[in-house]
Picture 1 (cartoon, rainbow, N blue to C red):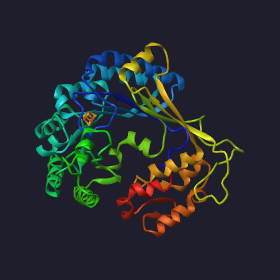
Picture 2: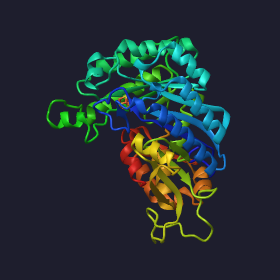
Picture 3: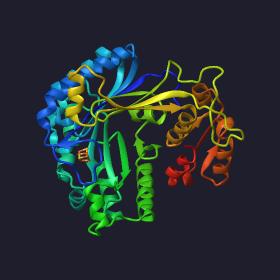
Picture 4: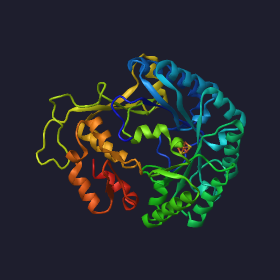
Length: 417
Ligand code: SF4
């Protein structure tokens, strides 16, 4: 239920900042040609997990997520070592979701088998597209057959929870090519993947792809064409029986939703561990303002109140793997940035994130329990305005996006921050 209650279990995010090569559209914190750092990096990450767990008092955690970068570049034994470190440092639930992102060309059945032994119980495969032209345009260094083989290998090894990442809106993609991608992956295995994440290509400034677009070498589809691809995917996955539970995510059942990402969308707390990883935590146990403190300047407040009390904190660890390793070796916290989150910002972020959950939305009771203010008290006029435009639905116990609001989700969510 969005938002998370105060003090809910953490998500643990472990960043692996290494890739075999850097794709031209990528702006993640990842580095090619630095694989020699992996042993020292894993040792530093293990130590940092211990430090953070101790600082949190061994706080409860319900998910572990290995993201990157390409976590599947790490030997399975090193993954197992890091999972054990998490379980030793935090009170990780016995049934925790433990996910790992894998690239199709760095895996095989034996490796997946070893990952299961290491404690991984959910895979996220970076398929992106099954079109050769798309793979080359996106600068992926795998072939379509590699992705199909990776999925088959995961199944053969015993993984029953596999998510696929696909990208739409890449330069030159046609509706027919997108339909072919969806048809192809839905036919994998006996009845397709458990989960799908479909991302609209964002051409990030500063990437080689942005340069190519600026110079007219590549042309990305316009917003209408991208919206058509998104609507086609919604229809196709609905026919295939998937639950569209978040703007970009579909699952076969509610139990197969990404529990780790639900922590983010419910504006919960998470520990970001590793180079460039972001963390988020409430200040104190409850994350609520103390009695007598002002709620701050609130959107739509007729009378702005100051100051805005700090109710949370966002942290970022050193970006460069070498800097991260060196800081840990010196016994320092490898943190490069700490940002305080005020009550007003926290409430806005609850809306911005929670509205992405299509059925769940943001619940009145959960909002009150988390922030100590009622949803209507804080955002009543904004909600009424958006409901009048047909972009959100004001239900008796929650607010959520309408179908029309879904197509404008970023703009609607931005109204709250
Ligand atoms: S594999 Fe993923 S993380 Fe690595 S460079 Fe490509 S898009 Fe970025």
